[in-house]
Amino acid sequence: MTLFKEIVKQEKQNSYVQRDRELFSFYTLTLIAQEQASQKLKRKLWTCLILLTVCLGLFFAPINQLVGALITYLNTIDMMGILKMALISYGVAGLCVVLIKRGKIIFR
Image (cartoon, rainbow, N blue to C red; front, side, top):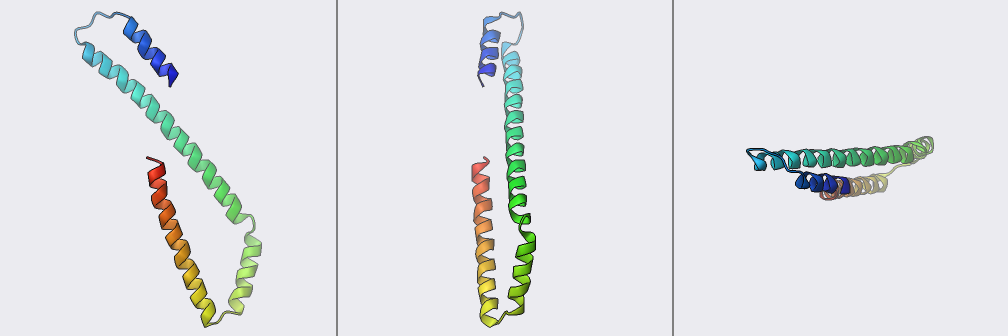
């Protein structure tokens, strides 16, 4: 951020012979805005990549134990078990919707 401020300061100190100073300043500010947007996008992409890697590591590491426990649980399922699983799945789906909406607010 300070690099951009220094560039703008240096450009303001230089005197140019131009017919349209507003066009030049608009062009300079546009270049600065593009660079800032590019850096912001790179930060978001790196953050998403790191979060995705962590989530995949957390969810896929104990996959064998989870599958074994799920198969064992499904063998002994009854009507109350089905209702519990439905309640849990709706709860997880609702939590995912809330987190997705909150993620949109965070990444603005």
